[in-house]
Length: 313
Image (cartoon, rainbow, N blue to C red; front, side, top):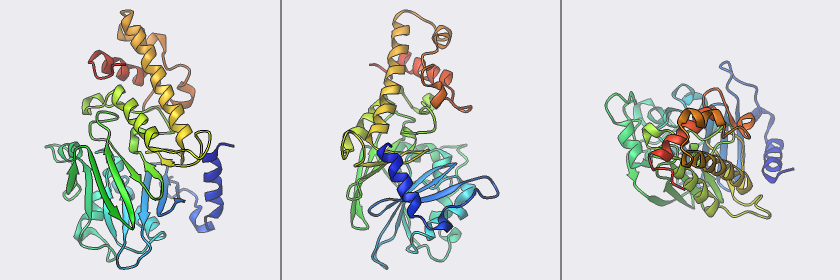
């Protein structure tokens, strides 16, 4: 059995019965997994959040990577309280997507927080996340926008652990970041890496196929396997199961193959309709194509990215 699958099974086996719950009234399944060290995975059918906790009451606290959809904030906070009663002190957003930032305001706004949350919550994200969330017509709630931003890399220490945020320019969007917990040896990727579907290359928000591949290569460069590309650094995708380096390698290779197929068709003078008809994603559609983001939609995004020059091999 794959190392990542074994780790998930072992983690599930260690959970108390109360932590292995049936879906709630809205059909949302939540599971809390201890990944390694200070880091936990709050996994749901709506996406993943990474939770880092401290062990020194009164000095440490809780750090969240992404905050999930707004409608699930109360449930998310309930799950977090089962891991730690310390206050939330940091929120790190991996993109401006509403399913990653929807709980920002309720957690970070003083008059909307429960008594156990401290008055100050630092909210970190890439510069472009702030620009998109604060733009006219964004519909973002007051207090939900980042309070601190960065352009390339952000490094700080919390809960006795060094944490690095890296910008992944022009991957899924132009505001993507990944988060590396150095002592715990865990990487939280946001929607740069998924196990539930193809990556969404959002061209309108600055995404590109080459940026996506570069981001996956960066994750691989940061990760260190235990043996044969498996085990070692654990990787939390934006959606889906807990993974290791081997899973990211397979995903990177799949995306690279699709890009190269489409690039070859472009070099032969094929139109977008002809590229779609050639079905360059056909080998992978059964595994990764979804109703919301099909293989044909990915093929069009890759085609346009390559034609615009943002996906050069």
